[in-house]
Length: 371
Ligand SMILES: *Cc1c(COP(=O)(O)O)cnc(C)c1O
Image (cartoon, rainbow, N blue to C red; front, side, top):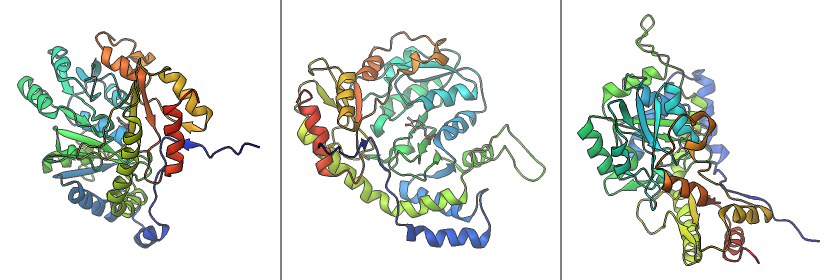
């Protein structure tokens, strides 16, 4: 009898030891402070500001709400937002949910991040924000985007959902832009099960953001803005505090897994690794490959071959956002690189405790898909 392997998923969250959260839970039970910027949330914000070395952190219930609040904090809800056609659906949905018209721009074929030249071509008098994504925590061309934003007087707000712990020469990727948003979802590098944060650069903006996350309430009798509820509970903040001491070693383990993929797959004709692990500062969030013409089969057939041996790779990001039914009114023209990426990309399982024997199964299938 053939013994089937356990299925391998694209990600598997790490969790802190249960003991590590017991003390924090006791604090919650003792204080009966369950949410609304409680003591654990405030401590978590301070620890994140220190860990990420960014000026101001506003913790939110999830990054989708974080993106909505960040865009809404511009004080406008009409006009156009330029965003990549190649991203997770939350990026586009957040902008549309706030009320903006979407303008999809193309991506760079190597980094798979927003192409600044194409952004500039798509600017109109109605453009209100540039909303790029650091895809797989590969840094965007932040200088070009900042320069374009400054020249046209348009804010740049980053969807940095993937970027926890990713750095460039100057520090955290999350310091770029007028605002950045990071996700603490279960599938990301650092998790509070559900959660996220908005990074801002001055105390006044942080205050505005914190109020927008709490219905726009200023005090008992004053409500200054059309806010919503984007608050994180004390329970989720406790999970974050307990998880934070482990994230650096998790990233190190991810680096080892990425390196192993790279060492054994970078020579396969038709397979391009999007995040070569030799670049400093990666957080190894994901291991996307592009399955090109020279590979013996299409991305979709490889995806199925992997499924057949219990390996659940994911087509992040497919379909192209411009092809989704709710965006059929957005012109899909000039998005060739984004379209090609969405047709060729496949994210392989990557998580800190992926066993090397399991990884070898994945690599073997890609090296010899007909075997
Ligand atoms: C995960 C993700 C989000 C949404 O994050 P949540 O915290 O799950 O709301 C937004 N943008 C991108 C690019 C993502 O990958």
